[in-house]
Length: 309
Image (cartoon, rainbow, N blue to C red; front, top):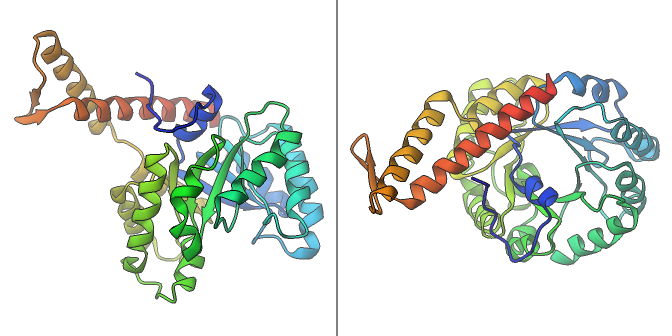
């Protein structure tokens, strides 16, 4: 069963895949660090976000852009998603970032500080000139109160948009909130972004955990994000990849249970029934659809992991 993506757009198969591909772990890499770009080919992250924005000083941005374009063209990252976070379009680097990076052909280009749908539309217009394959997806970082308020319109801007990424550190600061373990000041923003993303068939990715010494807190944040509905988490250090993959992945018991649900519901349908039971619990069509989604996701993860070893 294919994964259903709700959208008013008719997406190409490549862009549908861009919406549903595994993103349990999305690792930020500084575009100016050649060693990090080389090492990334050995890391088990589902997705790499090569950064030209915050992680690169102004004096190094042009050289970093050239290095990143070369790394993307080299196609050395296997089946991992390769995304590049560019500088804002209204900066002195943004338009040239798109020109050189789109021509190199990454899987996605990520725009920071998205507050209005027009930003995504303008970005798409630029990408069209340089994307020979016409398959580069767009990611939007939502990290300001205005971005959160407008997230539904942003999510509906273009069929190329495949994911929303929460910029939780900037958002917390802009809200004048405190960085607390429960992340309670962000719950409303999380909910609005998840609602918009799901309504328009997008992946929605949780923000980074800044305290690298806090393993327990990081694990809790991953579980919290998973339980809220996020597809994965952005990361700033390779040591956190395994935990994110584990928490946002499916263990064997979940996969087996999903298979049982599918089998039970198919049997019920053959018997002319609209419901089934598994372990005494009522199973309806919505449970069968979720089980199919879990099985499809598990298969994509297995295929991805084969391609990055």
